[in-house]
Image (cartoon, rainbow, N blue to C red; front, top):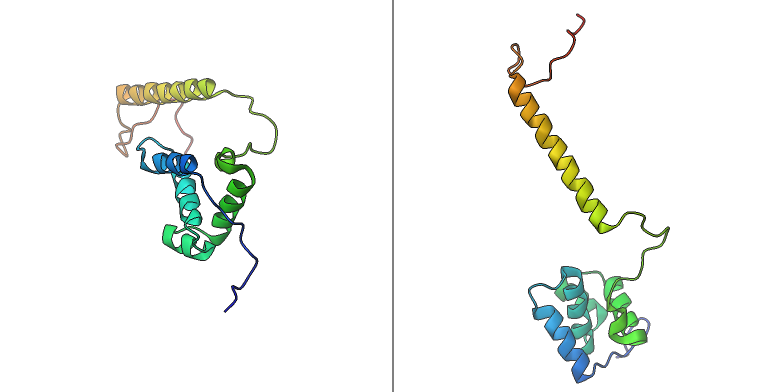
Length: 135
């Protein structure tokens, strides 16, 4: 019986490519997304159908088809994420980390301040002292 659907791109890996993908899958420090892509490509190279690979790995058939097509077109160079659309980043990773640390520091200072002024007498909750609330 003939196969249904569009014909899939034939994916044949060299020994070097297969070895590189197996290392990505086996390494503990590999990014999970990259390891999943490597598993997809290795399964596709075994001539499994996209549907079988998708069911086996718990991903969509579209995702399997996308990574099969990308690797067939440009081999392992396409295994990494493509640049995101839109304006280039204006904040570096270093600035993001510093900003995050500053936020944590401010939150810790606020917590220390609330502990120092003591709890609200009626509710027992800590709150900053300020002008009395209108009733």
